[in-house]
Length: 460
Image (cartoon, rainbow, N blue to C red; front, side, top):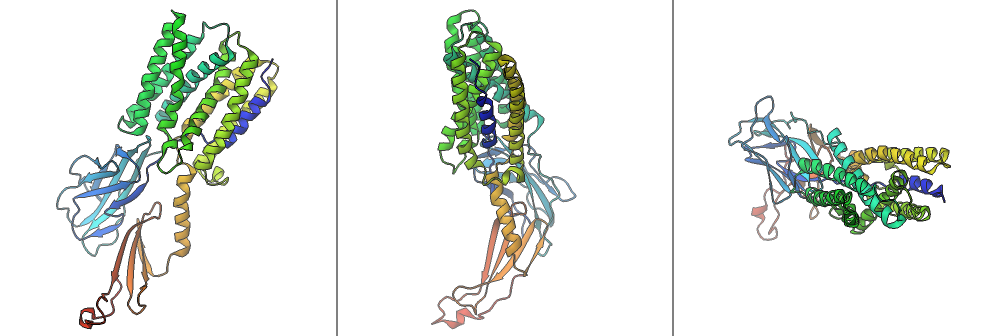
């Protein structure tokens, strides 16, 4: 019995819907001083507050524009979510630039810059530093590819062995041990990059240990077949590693994400396991292998829709964001596999080999995808930017890295003005600092002298 043709079509459809488990990003809540601030006195340090747990990353710097470093020590994290960059005491009047760099709790490198000036009356400063490169790199993509290939291979061959029950089992120990070694290598490289202090690093550390145990038992099974079943059982928990390290556990998301993500990885592993089993293992029950493939792609589609509903805010993000475009590349690769599979539909083993080769290329796209900012993280910043462009009052002034709008308002008495100075983040246009200046009007009924004059001038 050949595996039904609908298996590959269903897998392609699932890839169109499924965003894959993505690593998340910590976002800046505020900085002290604010970007573009003009200060009367020299600050002792720069604080960058995030909405998630972070650790200090590489490349933190602080300079006087056009001059030397003004760092007073290494950057460190205070209270898990605040990056502290110490500065030298008594900075002279002038413009200064700071580059901050952190590794978020789920392993992403995040970086940005801000500028501040010391000296009353100075113009808003322009940053003289550039952020660190934070997108996917060849090293990070390679490490993730090893991790994903190893996890899907080890878990997949375990599922294939338990479900399809192949008569020939001599190659199974070699397959499971090789896949587990790949997973351990990928996990080790990622741990070296993100450290063990993050959630990502801790999950990968556990995965590294489990992969080593599975690899050791698989190697032992080449000598003693009794070690094979324990090796396969130990390999199965590797399916939860990408979910615990990735986006599904981001703060504020429903925990159904974690369940959907684990099932997504398990179903992808089931599909990969059938392909590896048909290529490398003989004597499998094809009816059972076909059932495993069908169930796997069905679950892959359902969990893909669930994950996509949390990662994307609408279909337009498929072409408007880098994350969406990576999804389209992923889907295109599987559609290519569908076309090749149809050409080779009468040769099951060759067809599985071709699909497996395309799956290897597909994992490259997935390894890039998990390093990109999901659509749900891009949408808020874009919405704020568009709203600001349409609603910004004509009264105001701005500079590089700073936008200041002044609005006169008083809810109690329109005759008494109140002026608001708003500092916006130049990258996201989110409000960072709000100052209000208003004339006093307390105890007006009895002590009018305390309330003179009843007018103020806008801040300069």
